[in-house]
Length: 288
Image 1 (cartoon, rainbow, N blue to C red):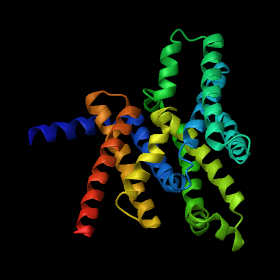
Image 2: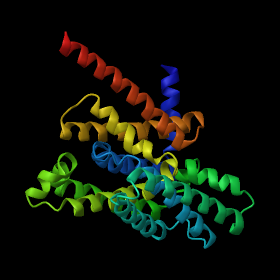
Image 3: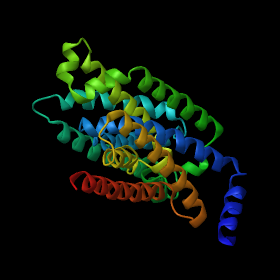
């Protein structure tokens, strides 16, 4: 009992600091946004688009760092959105398949980003800067009030878009041919999904870093799909799991002094394994 009380006292102490509250707000918002579109991306086999766009965002942030604009999300976001559009168009090219386009984009953006930082950066600790950007080890704890406002505005936009166009997103996710026959512009909605994914990627860089962003999209979605077969139930469950993992990961990282991004991903992995176990139990009960 004493251990629990000391843990709560420690958390209460840290919650008095603005940067911890900012981290929690941003963590919850990003986890919610990424989980809403995670199920759609997994079902449409767009999961790897997160890797490609996160590496582009890293390259854009590297260039922005040279001009002292690294903290300005609005500078990095247009580049990532443009990459999402190009990636979608290239993926539809019969000569360059989607997975090949993502692989090319990922490697190129990482190489260019690191090269730019190595040549032009004035920082004495380039390796530390790169690790912080790739794994989000410290950036989540240096968020400003302005960063929280920007994240909140974009998060509200993402949630409103998903709620308003839920039926169309559902139709495009499961059967694009049928969606087109009913008058839904599936190409337009695929483009919008790619653009919103780019927005989520940029917002999530401060939370888990560019290399771990896909985990926020994939793990909650896959975990919820192990329990629910219904799209709406899977999305809701994914959101609950994602938010829970983000909050738990932040608290655990504070208590045991581990990198925030990696801790959140580790909690997501544990949650996924638990959901796999629950899914196997449910399947066993159905068959017996």
